[in-house]
Length: 375
Image (cartoon, rainbow, N blue to C red; front, side, top):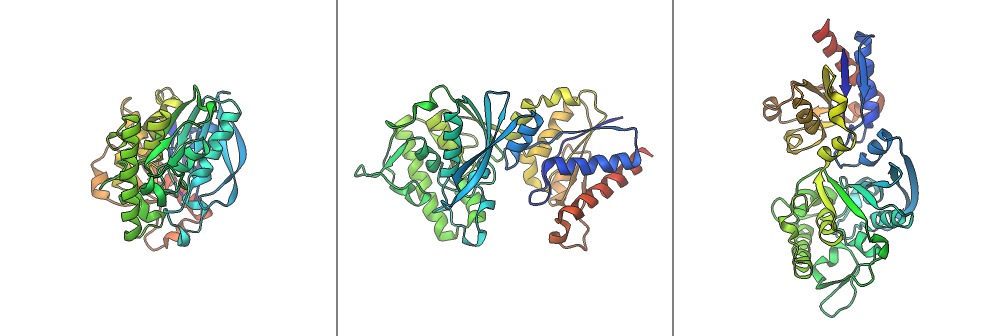
């Protein structure tokens, strides 16, 4: 029997590889002759770079950049196939890099991600894959773009500070100083959410509260996003509000699509294509996937659901092993054969998320399910 284990990370707890190894150990505790293959996966969220780089046996480069509050940090990008760089926006501009009690997306900058990109360009790479999940920013990517040479001007043609606070002040974009290193570069942006640039289902309304936005700040951010969308439309003829995925990472996806001709795509679909997942599962008997928290948003295109749909094409059964489970009624009618939560009801979440506890619970849940199914 051959089982493919393709899970996302358990965020804040275990990496994709660690989750997969614990599942494999649970399987082998019951069936020592069962063949297992652990495939780290990601959907454009933080962890995408490392998962894709490790799968392709690439290498990691480290760069000194600034974090969302302009403090110096070391960030990473991966190199695969000798010609392709892989970035996580979260590596330089992630919410996890700052004190959440002081987080304020009006001032959080994506500049550090621009510094990562510039280092990649200076090293001659012409293909860049970018995962955009986990950002701390709502600056529509102007921090990134400023590092690459774009200047954002007010109505008096004065250059403004590239932050979300000043999106409302932008009247025009000066691209005359953009680095020529961008010539011939192709960006593929892996989006883990489909949010619009602004509006009810937009970047600000859906995601800025978790980045520290109050209701008052949300109003300011929303006005800025609307204004910047109008500026982009006037200067490029591109309507970011009509672009699928444009609001991902606080508008980074939409702006880079409009100004750098980046390709926006569903993260998990593109990731599975990159690793040739169809070829991997063709001779498998069972697929096991999972993530730290599963709820109805999973069905909007997150990693486990992408794995499930890809497996269904070949008639493969998919079960999910997850940390916590919500919206069970909606998920019960999905394509998953079963969804198993490792969290015990009487154990606090903080305790369940301790890595050793999580590994043990994954192992025991898997072992119990395999034994009930195949013995």
